[in-house]
Length: 88
Image 1: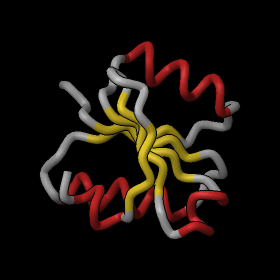
Image 2: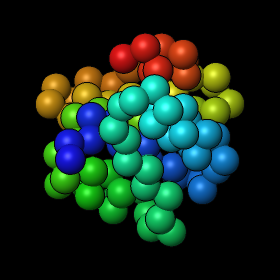
Image 3: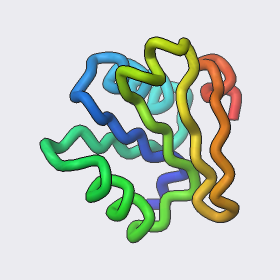
């Protein structure tokens, strides 16, 4: 199974779980990392697995109303709304 998206939850928040469910329900493969590990370990594991897009859900991103999306191949980081992410 190839996962085009990895959701990295930095604060074990319910918003990450809700986004996971919405992406899954849309028919896309997604992996949710909500382990009790540090951010660096989660980012390193997502890179090691080779998941193309990392969606970072943190208190900071939730406050801004946008989620951070990192393209693993280019390293480009963008800030997108949940609806924009679901349209990817």
